[in-house]
Image (cartoon, rainbow, N blue to C red; front, top):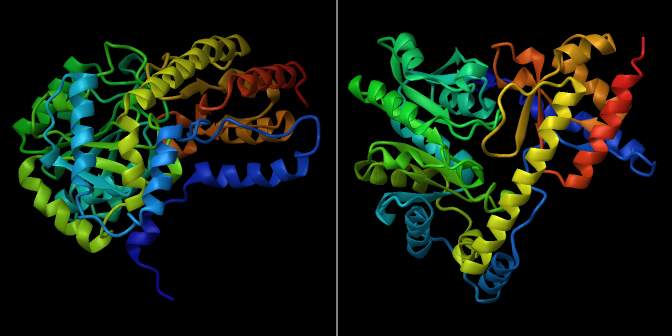
Amino acid sequence: MRISARAQRIEPFYVMEVAKAAGVLAREVAHTDRPMIFLNIGEPDFTAPPLVQEAAARAVRAGATQYTQATGLELLRERISGWYAQRFGVDVPARRIVVTAGASAALQLACLALIESGDEILLPDPSYPCNRHFVSAADGKAVLVPTTAEERFQLTAAKVEAAWTDKTRGVLLASPSNPTGTSIAPDELRRIHEVVAQRGGITLIDEIYLGLSHDDAFGQTALAIDDNIISINSFSKYFNMTGWRLGWLVVPEALVPVVERLAQNLFICASTVSQHAALACFEAESIAEYERRRAEFKARRDWFIPQLNALGLHVPVVPDGAFYAWADCTAVAQKLGISGSWDFAFETMKRAHVAVTPGRDFGTAETARFVRFSTASSMAHLQESVERLRAMIANPVR
């Protein structure tokens, strides 16, 4: 069977490959006194709060399970619009919001609508691997631009300007970012958008972790800049609805019918039950619960990052959002007699029974030195992980 060149361009998602290996070992040690602790997957340990679960059950009982329009329930689009006004003080009309089958579908729709074959899109290195694969799936080319800790592992206007060629179509950013948990300062983001706009390009920004910002200086939506920003968001992270597969896209008004036409053909609509459930996300009781959980994520970060640094797993930039720690494992790996984050990840998996993600997925700019820890797990799991890592580092196997 002949496989398409497009499919062959898509690299394996190594995060999931490591997760599979961790899963096999986890079954072997499940009934021991040291079961596997998973700090490798970016999934909140919280599930949808009670009002959301109840709304889903009501929708099923009422038979509200048939197709919606491709852009989503009108009431849900209005609720999302209201959230932007309440949380960020930004007017985002409901007519510019398209509800999608997760942020992944939103990214796919945006790329298919705007990228021609051969177009180049600039992304920071490191960055979330699937984002560059969405570009590739639209027959574009993702161009990774190396970033540094001094730049918060984010693109700058100067780097965008320097990397721009006659093939460049635009930028795909993420703020807060996976894997680093860092955001782009609003003033710098504005300058980046100005560089892009002056060249007739597009600014796409993945804001799926925006609700989990921990610093008011960064926790602002790019949609405040102007109506030409294209923002991707999701109910998975802040709203704790990962498996419900629901997200949204905010686009310029002229792009809505284009995205709608694509969605009609590719997805028909997002899950109707999930959409009805998501209406309850914006109730005062639910928002209060989400804010309590956001404070818990911050508390985990505030405890865990100093612990990693004390172990020699240096986190060069304190994450201001999301639930990740991007840690340089070079010194510890050398002490353990191994090379690079890939081997370090398997060492911690086998010896400490702690699953972490090696930097290999996230780019090539020194990513082999880094591992990503997810602090989406419980404080108890984080504390136990630190103790296991400390014991492993103190007793290197030669």
